[in-house]
Image (cartoon, rainbow, N blue to C red):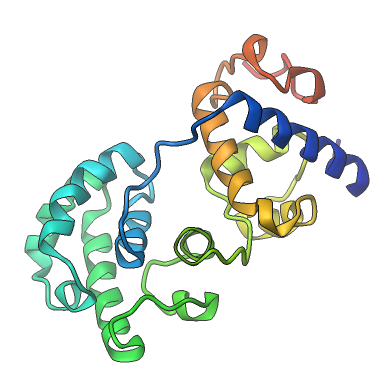
Amino acid sequence: MIADVETRKMNAKEALRRLRKAYKVTGPFVEWSNPLELVVGTALSAQCTDERVNRVTRELFKKYKTARDYAEADQATLEKEIYSTGFYRNKAKNLRGMGRVLVEEFGGEVPETLEGLLKLPGISNKTAYIVLAKAFGKMEGLAVDTHVFRLAPRLGWSSAKTPEKMSRELAELFPREDYLDVNEYLITHGRAICSPRNPKCGECVLADICPSFGMIR
């Protein structure tokens, strides 16, 4: 059962405080050195681990340095280069399309607005929120990935059935400046302790405030 908003806010605030204390380092996440690399890496991370994406992009970023490079990329060649990230045909198509949109509509630069980012092929609200937060320091929304989508109901924070609705519900529980931390600490905690099956409840720093403690096998 989902508690009222004020109770969930108190629970969420305490949970984030504990997670920040428990994990001095979050991640690993997609590695990047400029907004374009972040957009590409985050897009490739769909249905793929960040570790694998980083192995692929270490070579990819040496070859593709600008939006025009992606726009003019050969489809078959790009597919081979990103093959191990999965869904490579669609991802390659999206990267080429993204490059064209960036060149034609944004002068080759990654836009700093949610509206602009959502014009790029393959870019969802989740990806856009991450790019805006990390590359531009703009907390426009709370990114809900598979870990957040799984952990938030376990913690009693949301019962939403779609990432979009969950993002709105979670945004009510946290101040805007915490949006990125919520995403990254839940990802880290999901990987380390709160796995899909057989979570390590006995080792969890949230055990006494988690309504799902000991109930998931």
